[in-house]
Length: 309
Image (cartoon, rainbow, N blue to C red; front, side, top):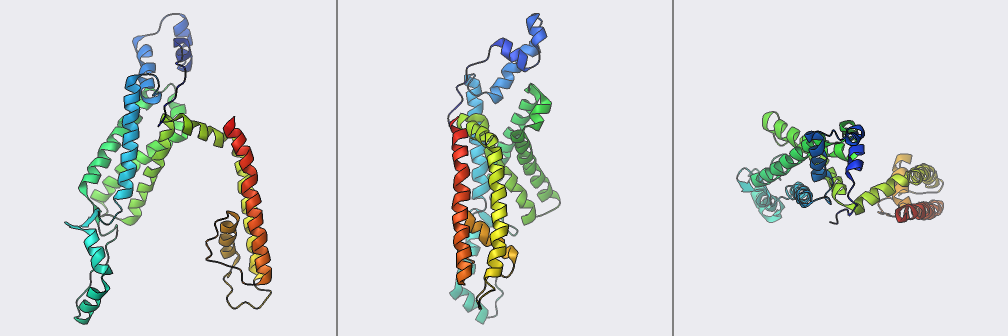
């Protein structure tokens, strides 16, 4: 991942950033005021020194390992029931010949394991624990050395980092003390996927992309408005169009079902789970698809111009 190559700021710029202009101009910077910007650069500006690059590499590695653990621990070959791999139970329950034989003998069949009845291998927990200890240390250090703690806390990326890190500890405490591998509790793990946004701190390309989204906010809001408007309009049209002719296979039981169809059609995906059967319904579907192409394509020009700038 590429690092930023910004020109290093002067001492005067650093003093202005931290609000110490008067002390700098009077030559009265104390030891803490001299050291704090350097410590901040270690964790926030990877291009400033070799130590900052090393810390950045550690952070990126922990992010990647944490996401890998999140994905891999749902695999049945990695999870276990007691001391046995969950994949053996899955194979057993998928073996129809064996199941039929046991049913004839009136033998109770064990149900297929889920994330509720299984646990992931303990090594993954220790790996996640090590990564989250690093994230905790990094967040506290950046909070202590930040030029403005209020702006630091209000930063969306820092809030994502805080929620993702605390979700691990909440999951750990509740699982060990109150609950036992509850699926609803494991939904907290989804918060950790958001940690991918932290990579923006270490990549100039991702920072440019985020700035592009901010610059194109008005166009994106306009796109969202037109998609919602088209979704409601064509959902209503397809609902009534499918009822004007004899249609025993009508799949549009309500306008809300039509909203799902309209959204999938406008986005040019088209799963095919809901299909108009009447002539008038096909006309409405064709217009919906054409509107989708135009709606999605037009804001792309503005987004590309903002990205180029």
